[in-house]
Image (tube, rainbow, N blue to C red; front, side, top):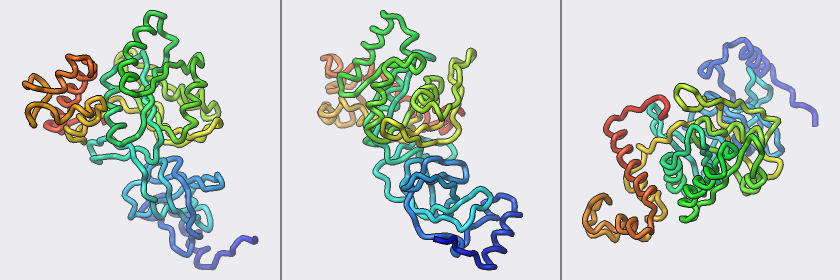
Length: 345
């Protein structure tokens, strides 16, 4: 099929746009410059643009219609290709199809910020450095439960542990295995248990979440050597990892499945959730909630607290119960202060 010839008006408009500065206000696609509506998936989200992958595997950078409130990696969209690439932009995204789920986090400036959508599995990456924090894992698990997205807990850098330390870590992870979560210890550096990770990833679309410095980029380098994601060392002064990913991206894996890599998050705030959402985010509480002596039970020293009795009976792990109260207290402090450190957002 021969290439459609442009009208004189279209040619003049294209020539004019080539000489304009790149600006959202200055550059707008005209309807007669766009082709038929197509379907695609967002594979990269930039500040002002997004990369759309077509059903045939081609990728085009597109503008967003002003009517679209947000577009994130994983979104299924309808878009239209331009008659010619203008200022590096190849088309425009017209609409976003309904999402089956979305992963959100609080943002001090934007309120609730969607990070990715249409996810089959959230992979919570932790590591022995800076430290193994069960409290941070619990934060992510509350988000997973609230979004109703299955979770896999991955402990990276296992090669840095002695046999005795590995045994101790396994005891900590057993807390989660006991209540139905899957866990996996591995090393991106040595390749230990990476094949097992491949098996999990092949199930669908997964997303890595976790503090900076736990080795998310190193894992991607192992899974997708051609991507060569930047890696960052743990800071000697702060003990925190350095952010190495600047844009959310979706990668296709050779062994099957997709992987979304999102910018590093040092701490996952929960101030956007209600207290009962955090409570319901602890799956082992199910079946016990609602059986306390008093309806307004705070699950602390309240008489007749069914949750505390379950802890004393060994039905609920004491560490998880302590973390639960820490998350509730942290939420209340954040709600009252309405002020967050830069690393919290």
